[in-house]
Length: 111
Image (cartoon, rainbow, N blue to C red; front, side, top):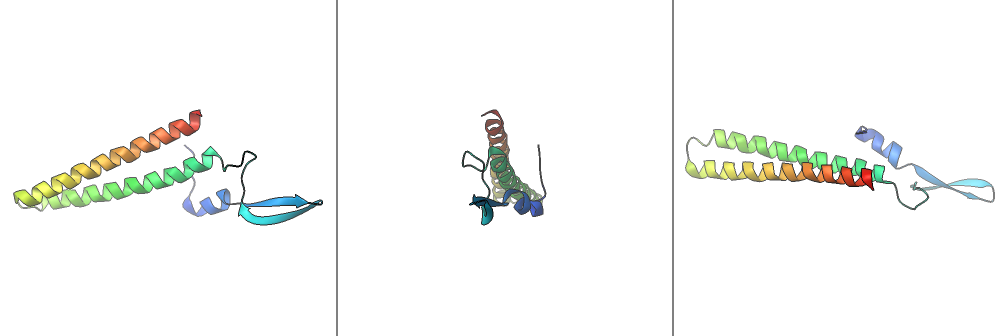
């Protein structure tokens, strides 16, 4: 998979489009698009990879916090149950985010 650093995202994918009028080229300061009028599936794939990576990172942080709550519950059944349910929900969220990224990548590469 082709990944780029976030600080280069603006430079590569939000390049200004230009218009030729009467032999002169004018910069429109609008994002460049391809001939079909879309920004291309590769651009969409990059943006969605960033979104899914952020969701995955948040889910991992929640899993770590819930694990610490489970460890420090000191045998209290209510605290342990709360931490366990948080772990389960965060793990399900992480699985959904990973599945969504795989599905989007598959669709964009095979359409």
